[in-house]
Image 1 (cartoon, rainbow, N blue to C red):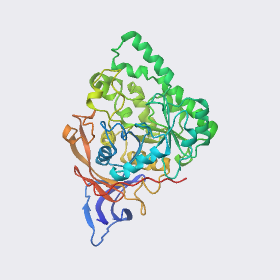
Image 2: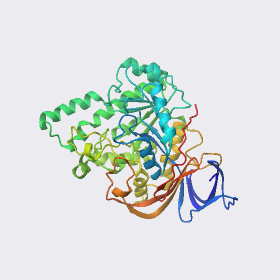
Image 3: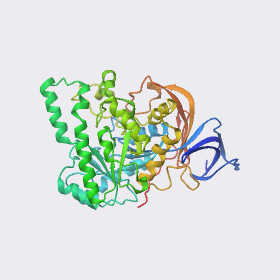
Image 4: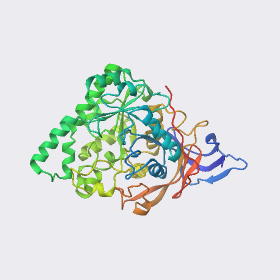
Length: 444
């Protein structure tokens, strides 16, 4: 329906929780107040529930094109809205990589037809495509992605002239994967010499080490400081990297920003014993002291946003030995549930969760009219039942890969409704695919 009124919800928005109604018309929030009545409107009673802006996940891998046996934009966007994620930004290391303007636009065309959530796609970089990457329009593309560390194919960028050109000439935000590839390879050779082909999964934290992360993050921050780049460092995993990020500058004025992913807040290296390669990811999950430090930095604003780095692989692929099993974890359906667990434990407020998952990604990426519940903004929002308990099981996992490291976990807190640009895309386990999401647009 064109007109919807959500009544009696507790609205979590801009640091407050208020009881109010929301009137949506043609995909836009028309009014927030109490009470609201509208003729010929679909009325939804949210009494006892909470309403939050749609989550914006700035780092996902949906595997299309070329790797669709693992996932695709259709399946993973469904998982996103089931988890309250209404907008995503997807990475370029598909097959072929999105390293030309034509291949990038091909992904947008696929999403326009198949994505239930709003979408944007990063432009990929190589040692030889800087001139092409610099042609993207910052109003239409979320940013440029540089793998300053191991990656797929030739997407590792380490040639000094290419890096200098990208950092000093880009008008777009640059997002980086920050690990020193040479340090990682040297560490791997040491473990091969010790274990041969039977390296234990627990060695992953030492192979993709603290040193590898810190070394490359320091280098990237140096480039960005010299060139005045808008630099966003993805998936921070170590306590030692936190020194590079400030909490004394308002986000709107920050040039160097940072992200933490839910798995670095939830898991630590002791979990390799039970979950093995299920939680093998890059950068690696490290000792518990890092998890604690990352959470503290999230609360005090050294870490700016929460994301997932959602990266599905098939169960069969992940059941291989350490050297063969690919890195990556499916997470987007359960990221809000992870944060709600922390809320129920008294570790974080609902207001802070919304700030880091909804408001701050919109502000950091300068997204037009999303990320907040405001009159005149796109109606991206979710309704939550915070007291409902449910268990992650095969029959309610939406990912195409069909598995989750949270399988068997009972979460407290459930997404009952998700609206994407005013369209009720998800309601109590059912999807409405009559309308797709929209392409994200950005302010200069």
